[in-house]
Length: 524
Picture (cartoon, rainbow, N blue to C red):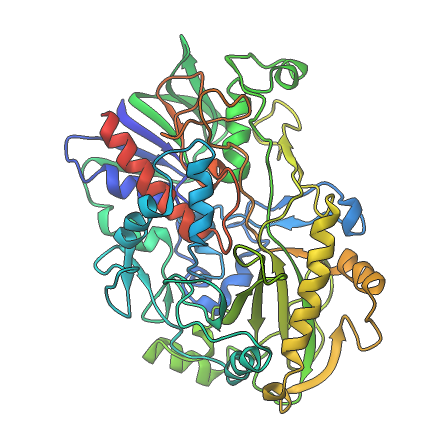
């Protein structure tokens, strides 16, 4: 028996394992459905896309999306130590202070920006040094890209030419503006939560890590979580926890596990002949995600990442920790407001010195670059439900992209703004033919049809175990991240977000785990 069982060794689980085992009198079992993070593609930053569709990816797909040409959208999620932090684009982005103040004001005390900023700083080992907004000495290395593509430099200049002021630090005193993204890398290598938080403490005698262990349900007795059931190969097995069970399996697997364990919408569980221990209709609801639409050009100069991996690239990477293989792919971008009176940015821009075409499209030959506009606060909401009572079946993912027309209109504005930046003078020397949307696509109607065929997730699903007050009937966890209706059970991952942050979600997930660790230790 262990004091704590953590399900999922991803962006949150590795942080929890690190922090909870700082107390030598506490024993922790960390369970991961995937394997070890030893593949070279998990270390080389620019090789990240090779993990998508591999055995290190859960391989989730949404249901056909009516507003996206009835396509099923691939949702890569890391199935490996480090979880999605082992396969993401490494952008370190906290979001906007208003995001956290909104959580606090919606009934979640302790989650305002002033509350969470110290947690961000605690995790961080900031290359630029300590400041009011940044910390040093934390496990997670955060820094500037060691090698920046010349087209990326031109894009940053193009943003300034387009009226987007330069911002040297999106995680500083203000978010609006354009600039280079900082990344979670150390000496040119990916810094996942596995390498940053887990590896340094793997030898602690009070920590046990088990990979290739698929948890199938939480064991509940007398409205109390007492352990978990898991597959040992194909054989079911069980293990008990004396203090708490903590789900850090992510925005898809955590609600799935709750429902398989009898916690969720009662009618849905009964339809699948599952027991009902806690009728929580909010489990699996409030699903939302960031959606972007790309603008893509051929490059007049052969300097993109298309042929990265040459002998020179390999030598530069392995000998110096520099060169094209250290690229995060999305190297720069910015935050803008569609309306000047908006309280905070509602569009995020990305730039990649490479072709970014997904949803079944073949990449063209030659060199190119991509810009993209993303809506930061989508109004559309979806849900996750069980496909069956079989824990090995993927759940039904229904994000309902663009079901709220306000999202579609804002994404059209995002494409227009992205195209404007990419046509600024600084990129004249690189800009070739516009491939997407194409020089003949201009009207809102045409752009709307284009978005329907090309818009893509940025891999940020959140909200499916929403945090809220005890009186909130749709809340799944309380502000201490305890599952409402079941004792000794918490959810600590991106699924608890009441509303998505303005930016990439990995850094906020790490922060959630830092706060979760504090809350757990306070209770203990």
